[in-house]
Amino acid sequence: MASKLYVGGLSFATTSQSLQECFAQYGTVVSAKVITEGFSGQSRGFGFVEMSTDEEAKAAIANLNGQPFEGRTLKVDKANPQPARTDRPRSGESRW
Image (cartoon, rainbow, N blue to C red; front, top):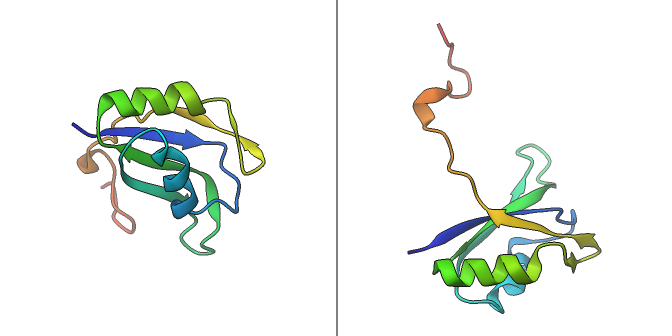
């Protein structure tokens, strides 16, 4: 089963492709995404990587957490589950 990781401390120059290449040395990367600002498109300094197995995810955490990447120190950990969409209003919707 795939395991999703949170990756913090990314350089503003980091791309989803370079993030995928970094994690690929520890297993199969299902997806890699750098989170960007909607308006400017600039990186927000974090992203998510999905590894194909828990073992690969654990290897990536053990080897990359606290290590330098593109001039910054990475923070790699298991991603917390996102709350259900019903818990928060969508953009433009009223809570009332």
